[in-house]
Image (cartoon, rainbow, N blue to C red; front, top):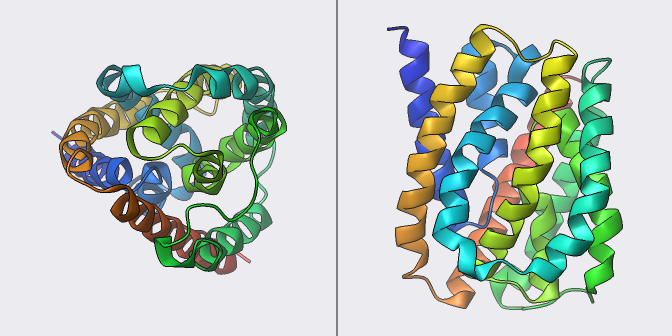
Length: 245
């Protein structure tokens, strides 16, 4: 067996154990490893496939905590944004987006005062409609970006299991459109499916391990973990964007 498959499995397990505890960011944590193992040109579709495979496990684990009101606002526009972003990925790649998102993520450590502050700006339910379109579009281009949504969920009042569950439900359905578009336009084929499958099996294991750890965390510790993941993810995005600039 190619050692690459085992490394992808291990990377998926570690990244999604951390991301479950920290409210997301698994896809972003996988970007550097995936790029190193299979090349940067195929990272977005492979990571999206891997996270899609792991999401049913997370959905089952957190199903009762889903806020369906948020899903109702977020999903319709996000499906459109996901398709347009995945299509654009097959035509070109826009690196500067990662730089902007990275700076935003790093700034959250000051917005939430290192996890001591519960809210940093008002967030209403209907705001998730335009947010869903923009985020799904961007995540299709770069292969991830879940932590970008965390400030919005936290400011809406969703924490711990509720935030993880609602984000997962939204992402699962958007990923169907993203993966279908990647495949139709030839960005996901052949060996890339196997890479995504092995990494996806790792993400499924990571979701289960993360759920065990999350149940033992307080709300403030969760916010601190979320902010830590956002900052780390932001730094990774900035470094990647500058390195390709």
